[in-house]
Each structure stands twice: as structure tokens, then as C-alpha cells.
Image 1 (cartoon, one colour):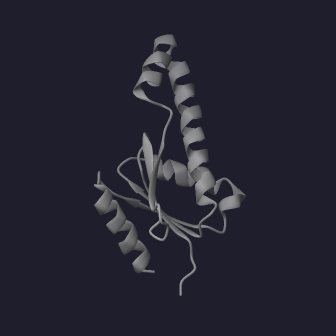
Image 2 (cartoon, helix red, strand yellow):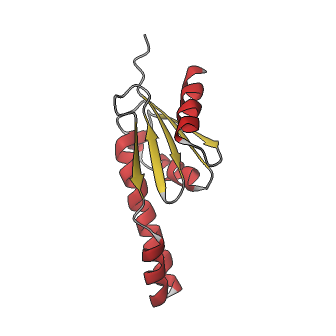
Length: 126
């Protein structure tokens, strides 16, 4: 019996869908606080302010996802944007994640069923 705790995360810069196929509530979403409204308000002040705010809010988004990842042994990050790679780079800088196997894969927009199937397929190969 495999006791490895596995998590799949489909993400872009606006949201992360966390998928744990072994949990009763196997899927939930973490939303980024950097919305179009926040971006629009920040850019009215200046482009520099908008970029700083974007960077701070993305880091808070990654930190929130990272706090969940700490509970797992094996993680798949996938999605259509660079957000998955940015999160992976963010986590690599922190020694708390050194014993967690984290893999990154490209993926298009997907339905919830497609995301679940992708996570299941990925972890069945191992």
C-alpha cells in the first residue's frame, strides 16, 4: 500500500486548483488576490506601483499554496502559464520543500474532470 501523500495543482496566475485524489474533499481552489480591479487601480497610480503590487500579491499567492504543499510528499504542478514554474522556483529557494518531490508539466485549459484524470494518470505511472 502506498502511503505517499500526493497533490496535483493546476494553476495559472489567477487561481490554483488543488487536487488530492485520496481526500474526501479532493479539490479546492485558492484564488490570487491580484485581480483585474486591483491591477487597474494600481496602474492608475503608476506602472511601477502596479508591478510592485503584482509581485507582492503573486508571492502571497505562492506562499499560500506552499503552506498546503508542505503536507504532501509528491506534487505535480501543471497549467497553461508560467505560474507553475514561478511557484516551483519560489519553493526551491526554501529548504522546507527540499524533501518534497515537485514536478512541473505544461497543460492547456482543462475541465475539472480532465484535471482529475491528468493527476490520476501522473501518479499511477510512479
